[in-house]
Image 1 (tube, rainbow, N blue to C red):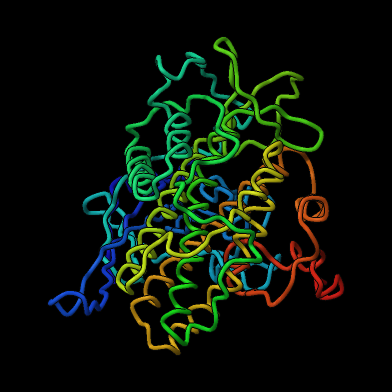
Image 2: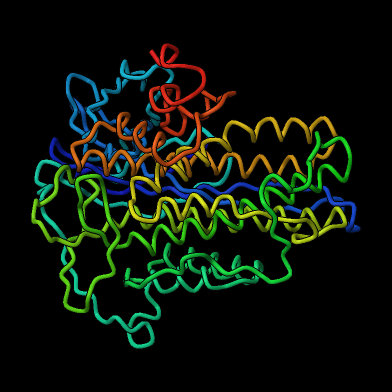
Length: 470
């Protein structure tokens, strides 16, 4: 168990909290018979934001992201030893982390101690890996003005002048890159620069109707792609990995498209309609803790910076996923593009291009959530075949995808909250109008709920039936 020392104990009082960002790094080894070395190793990173506060003069530390919809628990009220999420008022017990609002959902609690001698806080991390304090800052929830908006000007509609290094223009560049190797490289570069805040302008622009693809790819309808089998043979495993690679390359583009397409929007009765603002347009940037719009008829909005954080991270992880799969294909004697591919995922992107809620619901809470259902089955097939190298890669992908679905649900819930719409009813309405047919089992209930997509979302629009949703 690692212990992280966080300065600033004396700054904590009844009206202040500390939010600390902790980076975790882990190593994973892969056996590779193509090299003389017995194994190859890779290091992976993730981060956790921990909210630290005083409750009855006792030090408490929790994950700052609500496990239900991603709400900011650092801004939560503390009532009678319960943490009350500011988004949907889910009440989490500070002793157990559990909530009566959803069985099986638990808020992460960290062990924490006062270190009065050097005015610090000792935070215990109970998982494996190496940990590092990246940053920490003080917030004062009681003094926040939740209706305050951050205004910024759009500088130019010409991407060749001042906007070429903006986030949106970089996203468009990825969409217009056909070569998958170059696309992955650009995606990883953007993710790194955004994380380090080397990109400091959201920017604007119009994304292409569809991303570019190499002419050498053989596109067929989804029904005519190669039958994949059960991974019992090398041919079958290559077919499955190739299909996953195709999904991952589309997923890179979907993550960048949602940023570029919905960077700015107007509020409509049904949802968020994308807008490409003019040079003089004043933008009202939403805050993650905001609970209502300004109700100005022609206001142009931008999502909170955390929205862009989430989807840039997702794009970078999808690029990592494609690279893991593409390299594995080469190790097995094949390559991406060796088999036919389809563009079924982009059909959903086109059908949801006019409203952010539609995009979040269909792409992230239907299609990506379906991946949570089938990924464990795929991993089991490769385990039975003894392909441990592929299992390691597919396991990384699956764990990341849980967080991707969670991000989609988080921002869907955020948007519904602003529109004063019931998120379950809104999801059901979108699925019935934008998705062909009913959602079909089997459902991976455990990982879906880890992503915040509980049964109330999907069972009422599934072939299982409404009664099972109760």
